[in-house]
Length: 243
Image (cartoon, rainbow, N blue to C red; front, side, top):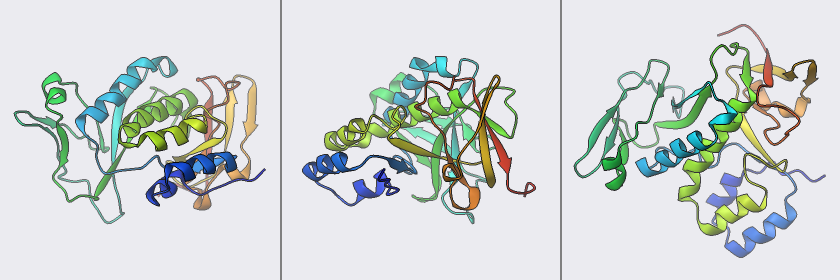
């Protein structure tokens, strides 16, 4: 099988015309995605779409809460002193940022009506975000599959608002970023891993070496595979001691 590790984000950034996009879909059998776009920050309305997706699909992780993770775009940037604000014409709402870099996005109808923006007190490009869905009591060396599925659903709901019709069609033609075996969404490892195994009850399978990225910092899991229940665990084999 021909496998493209070319990122969808790179193809979109290249300005491929809709007709070319349609042709590309015919040729691509498997696409690996590091991020849908991995932007700085979206509008408040886009984040609310993520909140809606979380509520609609919360059965994937019924015990989890939705937070968002703020992360520096380069290692030399500190999160210390960073503030987040929802800003509209008449609205200004501070969003508390936890010491772990996570925050909860509140619902506010006035901010939604005003098409408010999300403002950081740092220059553009300094920080990026990801959804964070964590079921309580999952061990530090593991992730729950349903949590990862729900994170993907939230991210897709937020990101798709900024994609053109043709580009949204491209994703959907591949089966969607969260439910298609043709799309491999790359996950960030908590730290460098040598590999992982999938565990659900008595079933246990070691992931192929190709499921782990260079340096062990990323990995791909079968989000689409319904034979693995949402309670299945992705158990990491760390490459070395913490730190």
